[in-house]
Length: 292
Image (tube, rainbow, N blue to C red):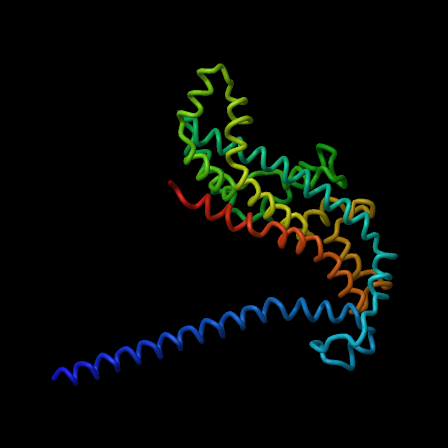
């Protein structure tokens, strides 16, 4: 009887090990599949940027270039005003992130520390704004930007990007709820005003969340083409994203190798920002999602 029990236990353990190893193999295959979906288009674009047009037509898209030919990059840099686009994109990123961070933290501070009658209605307004498709309000927003005289200037997208959204307010709110109200009360007893408490106590405490949301906002602004294309059609106001669209319509840079080179140039700032600050993204989200 004991021998039979031992055999059954060993059989159960072996089956469990096999099922566990099968599950691990499935996870690895799924990871490889997802990685291939993300990485292969980038590799194809990078490879094409170093090839000539005849090579694109005769070789496999996944075949690496035999030599690093930078002629496509030189042509794009010479004819596409890349440096103007880079300057405008950096202005939009810096201004939008700074203003957006200040507004978001102020709103979260008020909603966390103060009680007022329209507090729930305020949250409802944000939710309604998230539910309504942006294209529905685009006509009103476009008319507003035209009437206040900021159309075809860098100020138009800055005003749009600077607005806070519900996700930002929620993450800041989670951080501020971990800060005891007694900290504010102690500062008020020392004669500090509400703005002093916000600037010297509250804002420094939400720097991890600010880093996370600032990086996400910067990547979003760099990758956005719709708003700059619609509100800044002038040549002198092109960003990196609208520059790439211009390369498609420009006969000098409309070939696949030159378009690939332009796409790689546009990708570089976003990739640099992400790889440098990726640890702040995950740590900030994790810290904002946990209450002590």
